[in-house]
Amino acid sequence: MLELEKGREGLRRLIYASRFSGPGDPDETLRTVVAASIQNNRLVDVTGFLLAGEGRFLQWLEGPAASVRETFEQISRDTRHTDLTIIGDDPAERRWFRDWNMGQHRLGAQDQALLSEVGLERFEPAGLDADRAERLLTRVGERHLRGG
Image (tube, rainbow, N blue to C red; front, side, top):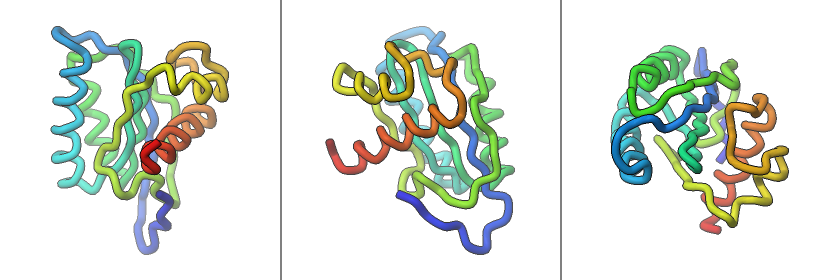
């Protein structure tokens, strides 16, 4: 999952949290958003991972700085979620999710140990700092990649 970005200037990683506020079913909205994100992100060389649960989202975006910024600006205008909180926005030397234009995982009971590992009793990602958010996203992503 880790890739060195040789010859790339301006690789950026942005992690944010938000809360679902749109009409309709959150699960159906998630499927729609992920499908659109895969297509849109491929066009601008953005990769990442999205965790969803309890009406909340935690997302990691990575890619060229301008593309990540533009993608996040589009996300921030989307009325289906609110309370956007940027948790981390830093230069990056590597991509963690290089193979996924947008990987995603819906948290369930099987993920409680991972939440506990980062100090959460329930999925409330806005309270995470960048290190704990990164640890949660990469751990779930690694497990998701292995299929378990």
